[in-house]
Length: 185
Image (cartoon, rainbow, N blue to C red):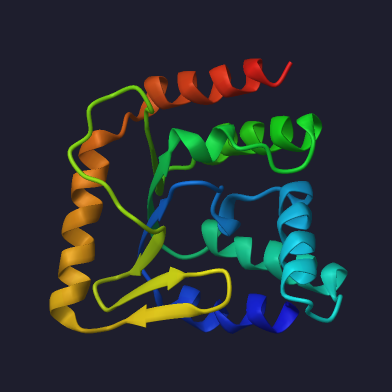
């Protein structure tokens, strides 16, 4: 798992604009150690992979330095489901949601949340990350799809723009996160 965590570092360092869409989980770049640990443990067990969870966790958290270096921008759209699915226990989720509130205040991060109860402009079947305008990565439980065909990358970017239009930002997004925190008690 550590190798998988480190494999993306060169791509992260080259990218100036990250567009991230997740529907059921908090993206790895924004995860707390406890949340990451729960995710990594699950996939190590599920994939019957060698258990290097401590090294993998350290590598995953080291990757987060990318949020604070350079002039990269991060446009993130989460489904409300991503902030409500309980990964780990209540304390793990409370810490994760608190971290999300702190992270979304960083100047180069735009975080939108698509409310479950609102009419939407579009739907996506899978979570995906767009790196600049050159690569789309779609992670499945067992593999990663890398899409580089310019016409397909443009379609993913267009879908991302539509997802952004369905999202709420700022105070409305913080209110959704606080509501999810209150529901933990």
